[in-house]
Image 1 (cartoon, rainbow, N blue to C red):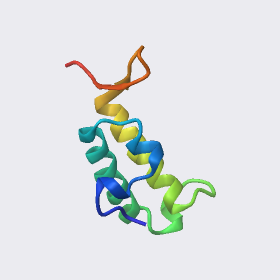
Image 2: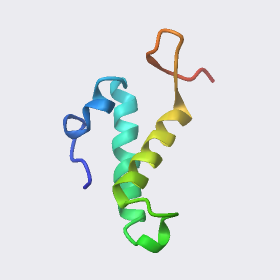
Image 3: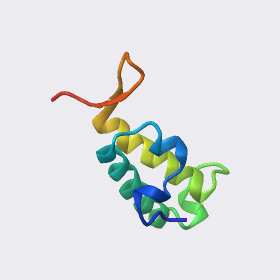
Image 4: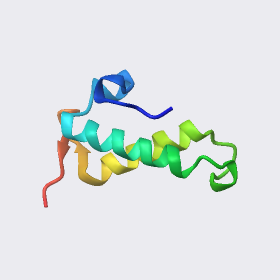
Length: 77
């Protein structure tokens, strides 16, 4: 199900990502939720929700990385 706000995101997201990364996650998840509605658009037996979470994490990792301090930081350009 799509998320309406950052506060609705899973704890595994809100407890580790900074606010901006959470915004990216939310937008990517909701977009993927819409895009992969049809099972034929998904690979393997992944559920719509599983695919949306994978897409959301990939979007976060595009602009953020986990530092040596185990916290997520914006990638340097």
